[in-house]
Length: 314
Image (cartoon, rainbow, N blue to C red):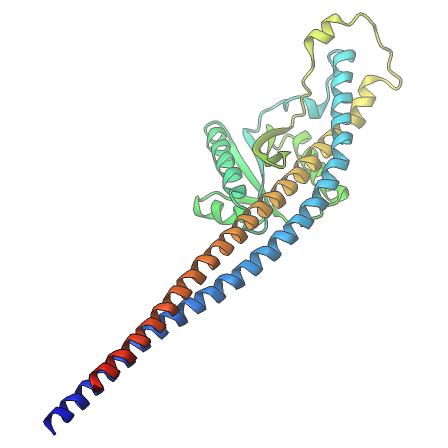
């Protein structure tokens, strides 16, 4: 009788231990299952964002590639005109008569995140430029995109104006911005205007770049100028040609900078989302292995408990 009671007590104790271990193991497997499901959902999201970024990159690349020959052609034409016509003065190509002690800095950031180090590189260069000019000038900051706003607010930098141009800016839209900048410059509102943007070099290389938009000073090849033996006669006169070409060069330069910035943003987001998708896939495989091992451990434990219980009854 006493032996039977002892066996019954042992069996009850084993059942309690088995239920406790079973709950712990089930809780572990349930937790791993939840993580596997969450990682799979994240992978689907990042894969979708990668596909969207790829489509936007291709569209932006087509626009930037189509406008680049025109922008380069205008700039080369202005450079050639300056080299052959000699010393020609134009309000957009010379400093103001009286320095206002003010510099305009246009920083091109993105509206959305998830694009790797795109914004951090631009903001770093913009901050270095801002601090350098701040020693001798008042720096007026304008932004394209929303990601630079929080940074400027955190660092106590006043933003004069924030532009929203979207993913498909038109030439007319950028032309209006350039005309406003040219009007302010010719009115003597600032000494110079600079643009900070991500220049697109290739699919594997994008570089944060600082470009001086105003005054527009084409780089004249002095060796070619000194070797020139032909005198050109311009019709219409060179001054009249420059009055039309220099504003157009400013507009196309700004439009090309914005176009290349958008291309860089989309390709960096595409690369970042591909890396996130690959990492999520690897994490899902790792969690699946952990789940299988936990499930195998749970089955082994249950079999051991059954055998132990049977041995206790003998």
